[in-house]
Length: 173
Image: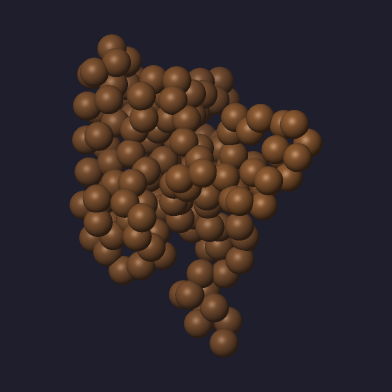
């Protein structure tokens, strides 16, 4: 999950900290399964595989990387299969598109109500491509002030910060 405690908590992102990754991936998958059941959504084998692959990686993955994973697992691996799965996951709040990388990452702030969005901030390691997500309570003050001054109503905010995680910084030193 996103934090080293409960989903959505305001702690440091867990994907950059030592943690039981298999546990957090299993917990996230259970939350998605419950959300699908509650909303009457079908998590097809391709959707589940793409989600599980994203959850297992803790990094942003391109559609082509996911296609390769599908093919390696002996599953249908035509581009429409992965793009439909990603569209389902993103539109239902189970994954995010990381614009800076043209890639996708599992949502680690927990499933949200159908159609609901949350303000996400992503810390992206430019070396290992690990992605840490954290939810923001509101847009940064300066952005909200600039938008207000322009008469603009912010509806969605996604912040992507690129840099080096501690592990990659240590390796570079």
